[in-house]
Image (cartoon, rainbow, N blue to C red; front, side, top):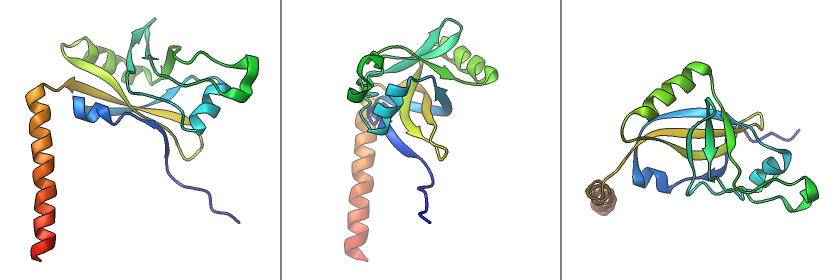
Length: 156
């Protein structure tokens, strides 16, 4: 028998978010998707670069996420940038909504992936924006760590 792939498979990742924000906490949320969106995600055609999550109609919604139409869906296709509802437990949702009300806190989508059961999930980050000098310092620290690793390999 063939062994199925265990673990998660990322359909889309927002690598820029960790550069622009201090991620304080992460939360896993489900997504309400149409069939053509799931097929497009399985092909890895989603973009999270300019997306964000926010409160709307008493829930938390994913806004401005681009999932292109699935070509074989025909007339049953979806809009590329439609708002998508996020599925969370009520206590988690209340905690996130309270945090968003604070100044400078944002809900940033970090990754859309398929769990081991094949269900699409989203990793949301509770984040504070970085200032320009924070970004420069993070780059300096990363370069120094890289240089340290090179020196250690050369010396011993």
